[in-house]
Length: 166
Image (cartoon, rainbow, N blue to C red; front, side, top):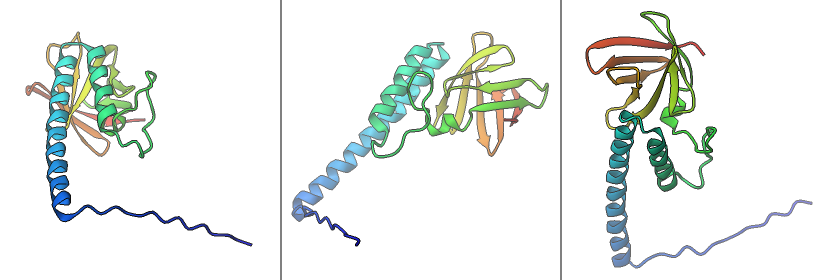
């Protein structure tokens, strides 16, 4: 015998004037959150450019704490226990640069290796670009992702392409 349990919940409906006020509030809060997210991203980018990986990681944690959906399952966490953003998770793996066949490894959504050069990375959502910096490089690198190809440039002078190999 199968029993079904029906659960009904009373849905509270605000009076029209209160509902309109709530809609205005929600719109203002959403705008503040959007601006805050953009400014956090700029701060994280500056921290990465300055080589301050710890600060960039703290900003990433703040972003995740404030803007992640508590009902949505988290992405695979890195060793520090912080979930990678979906943009960064897309890069994880091995890539080969076409011009010289150097293998690049994108590790945990925050750092990686280009041959023997360690780098840190961030994602600029406004420009839809990945930004990489290294103490050994004169210029920062920026990439756009298309399928399994990263098209990049170093501060606008040298262009190159990375293809996913794993």
